[in-house]
Amino acid sequence: MADIAALTALIEPEATTLGLRLVRVQMNGGKSDPTLQIMAERPETRQLTLEDCAELSRRISDLFDEVDPIEEAYRLEVSSPGIDRPLTRLADYDDWNGHEARIRLIEPIEGRKMFDARLEGAADNNVLVTAKHGAMTIPFDAIVSAKLVLTDKLIKATAPLIADGADKIIQEG
Picture 1 (tube, rainbow, N blue to C red):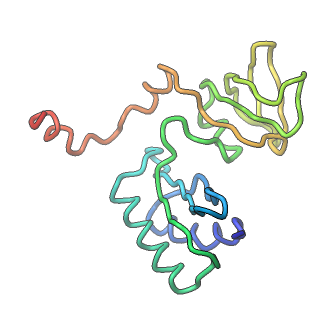
Picture 2: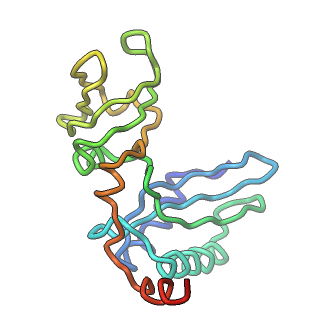
Protein backbone atom coordinates (compact mmCIF):
# COMPACT_ATOMS: atom_id res chain seq x y z
CA MET A 1 0.00 0.00 0.00
CA ALA A 2 1.21 3.50 -0.81
CA ASP A 3 2.64 5.75 1.89
CA ILE A 4 0.10 8.60 2.15
CA ALA A 5 2.55 10.96 3.87
CA ALA A 6 5.09 10.44 1.07
CA LEU A 7 2.43 10.92 -1.61
CA THR A 8 1.19 14.08 0.11
CA ALA A 9 4.75 15.43 0.20
CA LEU A 10 4.95 14.94 -3.58
CA ILE A 11 1.48 16.32 -4.34
CA GLU A 12 1.38 19.36 -2.05
CA PRO A 13 3.99 21.46 -3.94
CA GLU A 14 2.08 20.87 -7.19
CA ALA A 15 -1.16 22.02 -5.57
CA THR A 16 0.53 25.03 -3.97
CA THR A 17 2.03 26.08 -7.32
CA LEU A 18 -1.52 26.24 -8.69
CA GLY A 19 -2.72 28.28 -5.70
CA LEU A 20 -4.57 25.29 -4.24
CA ARG A 21 -4.67 23.80 -0.76
CA LEU A 22 -4.88 20.04 -0.24
CA VAL A 23 -7.86 18.88 1.79
CA ARG A 24 -7.22 15.13 1.74
CA VAL A 25 -5.05 12.51 0.06
CA GLN A 26 -6.08 8.87 0.50
CA MET A 27 -6.11 5.48 -1.20
CA ASN A 28 -9.54 3.87 -1.66
CA GLY A 29 -10.87 0.77 -3.34
CA GLY A 30 -8.63 -1.86 -1.79
CA LYS A 31 -6.48 -4.21 -3.86
CA SER A 32 -9.14 -4.87 -6.50
CA ASP A 33 -9.61 -1.23 -7.57
CA PRO A 34 -7.02 1.07 -5.95
CA THR A 35 -7.84 4.74 -6.37
CA LEU A 36 -5.69 7.65 -5.26
CA GLN A 37 -8.21 10.28 -4.19
CA ILE A 38 -6.99 13.86 -3.94
CA MET A 39 -9.27 16.62 -2.67
CA ALA A 40 -8.14 20.22 -3.06
CA GLU A 41 -9.62 23.72 -2.95
CA ARG A 42 -8.82 27.35 -3.52
CA PRO A 43 -8.29 28.77 -0.01
CA GLU A 44 -10.08 32.02 -0.80
CA THR A 45 -13.27 30.35 -2.13
CA ARG A 46 -13.14 26.82 -0.65
CA GLN A 47 -14.05 25.67 -4.16
CA LEU A 48 -12.31 23.99 -7.07
CA THR A 49 -13.15 24.57 -10.72
CA LEU A 50 -13.15 21.87 -13.37
CA GLU A 51 -10.07 23.55 -14.87
CA ASP A 52 -8.32 23.38 -11.47
CA CYS A 53 -9.09 19.65 -11.24
CA ALA A 54 -7.82 19.00 -14.76
CA GLU A 55 -4.60 20.99 -14.27
CA LEU A 56 -3.79 19.40 -10.90
CA SER A 57 -4.54 15.95 -12.34
CA ARG A 58 -2.18 16.59 -15.29
CA ARG A 59 0.62 17.83 -13.03
CA ILE A 60 0.30 14.86 -10.68
CA SER A 61 0.13 12.38 -13.56
CA ASP A 62 3.27 13.85 -15.12
CA LEU A 63 5.10 13.84 -11.78
CA PHE A 64 4.05 10.29 -10.92
CA ASP A 65 5.10 9.09 -14.39
CA GLU A 66 8.60 10.31 -13.50
CA VAL A 67 8.93 9.18 -9.87
CA ASP A 68 6.48 6.21 -9.90
CA PRO A 69 5.62 6.32 -6.15
CA ILE A 70 2.83 3.70 -6.32
CA GLU A 71 3.88 0.18 -7.26
CA GLU A 72 0.53 -1.25 -8.35
CA ALA A 73 -1.82 0.06 -11.03
CA TYR A 74 -4.26 2.66 -9.69
CA ARG A 75 -6.78 5.28 -10.76
CA LEU A 76 -6.20 8.97 -10.04
CA GLU A 77 -9.20 10.97 -8.86
CA VAL A 78 -8.90 14.73 -8.28
CA SER A 79 -11.94 16.56 -6.93
CA SER A 80 -13.25 19.32 -4.74
CA PRO A 81 -14.18 18.31 -1.20
CA GLY A 82 -17.88 18.89 -1.95
CA ILE A 83 -20.51 20.48 0.24
CA ASP A 84 -20.41 17.72 2.89
CA ARG A 85 -16.64 17.98 2.95
CA PRO A 86 -14.37 16.03 5.26
CA LEU A 87 -12.83 17.94 8.15
CA THR A 88 -9.19 16.88 8.02
CA ARG A 89 -7.27 19.74 9.62
CA LEU A 90 -7.70 21.34 13.02
CA ALA A 91 -8.23 24.68 11.25
CA ASP A 92 -11.31 23.21 9.49
CA TYR A 93 -13.15 23.22 12.82
CA ASP A 94 -12.59 26.98 13.11
CA ASP A 95 -13.40 27.59 9.44
CA TRP A 96 -16.74 25.78 9.74
CA ASN A 97 -17.61 27.01 13.25
CA GLY A 98 -21.39 27.02 13.75
CA HIS A 99 -22.09 24.26 11.24
CA GLU A 100 -23.20 20.70 11.94
CA ALA A 101 -20.76 17.82 11.59
CA ARG A 102 -20.85 14.03 11.88
CA ILE A 103 -17.89 12.93 13.98
CA ARG A 104 -16.51 9.41 14.38
CA LEU A 105 -14.11 8.68 17.24
CA ILE A 106 -11.42 6.08 17.89
CA GLU A 107 -12.84 5.33 21.36
CA PRO A 108 -16.35 6.04 22.66
CA ILE A 109 -17.08 9.19 24.62
CA GLU A 110 -20.13 8.88 26.84
CA GLY A 111 -20.85 5.52 25.20
CA ARG A 112 -20.83 6.76 21.59
CA LYS A 113 -18.26 6.52 18.84
CA MET A 114 -20.30 8.50 16.30
CA PHE A 115 -22.52 11.52 16.77
CA ASP A 116 -23.67 14.76 15.19
CA ALA A 117 -22.70 18.05 16.81
CA ARG A 118 -22.43 21.77 16.13
CA LEU A 119 -18.84 22.90 15.61
CA GLU A 120 -17.62 25.52 18.07
CA GLY A 121 -14.03 25.82 16.84
CA ALA A 122 -10.68 24.47 17.97
CA ALA A 123 -8.25 25.23 20.77
CA ASP A 124 -5.01 23.64 21.98
CA ASN A 125 -5.22 20.64 19.60
CA ASN A 126 -8.82 20.00 20.70
CA VAL A 127 -12.09 20.26 18.82
CA LEU A 128 -14.92 22.10 20.55
CA VAL A 129 -18.48 20.98 19.79
CA THR A 130 -21.99 21.13 21.18
CA ALA A 131 -23.83 17.81 20.97
CA LYS A 132 -27.31 16.86 22.24
CA HIS A 133 -25.95 16.25 25.72
CA GLY A 134 -24.00 19.53 25.87
CA ALA A 135 -20.59 21.05 25.18
CA MET A 136 -17.66 18.71 24.58
CA THR A 137 -13.92 19.05 24.11
CA ILE A 138 -12.51 16.28 21.93
CA PRO A 139 -8.80 15.74 21.35
CA PHE A 140 -8.17 16.14 17.62
CA ASP A 141 -6.14 12.91 17.61
CA ALA A 142 -9.20 11.01 18.95
CA ILE A 143 -11.18 11.71 15.77
CA VAL A 144 -11.17 9.00 13.09
CA SER A 145 -13.20 11.06 10.64
CA ALA A 146 -15.51 14.05 10.54
CA LYS A 147 -17.53 15.67 7.80
CA LEU A 148 -20.02 18.47 7.48
CA VAL A 149 -23.70 17.56 7.55
CA LEU A 150 -25.86 19.01 4.78
CA THR A 151 -28.12 21.72 6.24
CA ASP A 152 -29.84 24.82 4.86
CA LYS A 153 -27.26 26.94 6.70
CA LEU A 154 -24.41 25.04 5.01
CA ILE A 155 -26.02 25.36 1.58
CA LYS A 156 -26.32 29.12 2.08
CA ALA A 157 -22.72 29.41 3.31
CA THR A 158 -21.34 27.47 0.34
CA ALA A 159 -23.43 29.04 -2.40
CA PRO A 160 -21.34 29.27 -5.55
CA LEU A 161 -19.07 32.27 -5.46
CA ILE A 162 -18.29 31.99 -9.17
CA ALA A 163 -21.17 31.87 -11.63
CA ASP A 164 -19.12 31.61 -14.84
CA GLY A 165 -21.28 29.97 -17.48
CA ALA A 166 -24.52 30.25 -15.51
CA ASP A 167 -26.04 32.66 -18.07
CA LYS A 168 -25.40 30.16 -20.87
CA ILE A 169 -27.07 27.34 -18.90
CA ILE A 170 -30.14 29.49 -18.21
CA GLN A 171 -30.42 30.56 -21.87
CA GLU A 172 -30.05 27.00 -23.18
CA GLY A 173 -32.40 25.51 -20.56
